[in-house]
Amino acid sequence: MSEETPRPQIGDTRPAPQVGDTRPAPQIGDTRPAPTSGGAPSSNANRNRRRKKRGSGTSQGGTSSSASSRASEAPVEASAPEAGDGGAKRNRRRSRGGDRRAKAQGRYAMYVHGSHGATHIATMEGRSLVEFRVARAADETNQIDGNIYVGRVQNVLPGMELAFVDIGIPKNAVLYRSDVAFDSDDVDSAPKNDKRIEEMLKAGQTIVCQVTKNAIGAKGARLTQDVSLPGRFAVLVPNSQTIGISKRLGDGERKRLRKVIDDVRPAQHGIIVRTAAEGVASDDLARDVRSLAEKWAAIEAEVAKSPQPRLIYRDLDLAVRMLREELNDDYRSVLIDDKALFDKVREYVLAVNPELADRVEYYDAAAEGLPLFERYFVQEQLQRALDRKVWLPSGGSLIIERTEALTVIDVNTGKNVGSTNLEETVFRNNLEAAEEVARQLRLRDIGGIIVIDFIDMESKSNRDAVASALRQALQRDKTRTQVFDISELGLVEMTRKRVNEGLLESVSSNCATCDGRGFVLEAGLSWTPRA
Image (cartoon, rainbow, N blue to C red; front, side, top):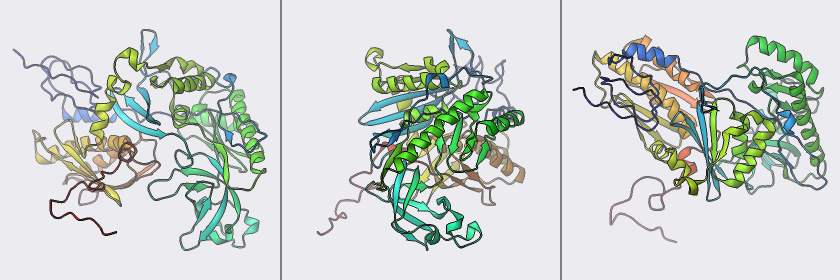
């Protein structure tokens, strides 16, 4: 009698194994294909080739917003466009899955849970958790990225090439020299790169600026004077001659859109066309651009009312913003357990993407008998995402350690003993680790400098293959990354743009006893500082 077939685990996206399959039971996050029929496991080489054929992520979409001028000095609010702006999609990619029970089956799902003044957003690929975001209730300091302010320069630091700007919140924001917009006629220096920040900005000067990054830890919010307004199909760059088209679009579509831009672009503003504009009619794109231009006119009118530091434009809530950026045919469902948020999101999607509105559903936890995150195993995978040790399907492991300066990831073979020789075993283990590292960086939202200690490989071709596999896996990540080749010590240095606080910081707080250091002094060694 054949050995009992291993049971699938949470996060496994492979088909069920065949009779006689002796491969290890699938683990959380395992995305390998099933073995071939006949019971014999596929070779490592074939498995690797199939892995490399996987997709490289989803396209980003956008939505347009209309602005309304207000009589009072209240900030302009981001809003959904008219229902007619949505239109029917033209030549858009269809859902990767087929129809089941008359409902499109996409690759991704989004589960939104509201509790304790925060909104928790989980993105699933199959049954694997790939992204987790926390949106606090918007206030003066939380979730202000994308907002536009009237700011007053407090002081300029030439030695640091930055300025501190009062935007009406308790802590001053930071404006770096590279993010300063200025009139070349007002600066004596000739080349742009030679212009000094003290020549561009003066203490007490009033400026219009936009938050590009929320405050993280002791660092204040980051600002830019290159303001942009995202819409569904385009991004408006006010008072600029910038023209750009998404590189994700094909050459033929880029040529078509370039001709459309010449007709729809306002003379005084720049336009960046988003991936979501693929196949849309010129009238739809023109309508989107026109609504953005009207919104900017309302913002300029609001700026003229008062020079005091204050908020003049508030971007959409994070949950709605994520749907604006990401919702497309690749998403099979969006489940929300907060009724008020569901109504808001549903109304927004009906306005900008009515063909996908049926995928936004309300989850009644009381009627279902289980909380949303428990029903879809988000809670379990979230707990695993907070562990320092991550197991690989073959038995190897990752150890993830975060420090103030950088994050270090150590790759170990663990229980993976291989079957051929040491070099092959190490190579296969490192390939698995490369894909899992990319997933963990995205899931844990780790930013800054990252050093990965792969197991030493003698073959240069193997080292290059592992580095290539890492870069390919990182293509699914929307956050900008830069990866360098593996050194002779087996180390990979890379950077990932820090946009938000990490997963650990967003769902936890430091221990009151050890202050986050992870240890407690033995009895008799602890002391209390004198007042």
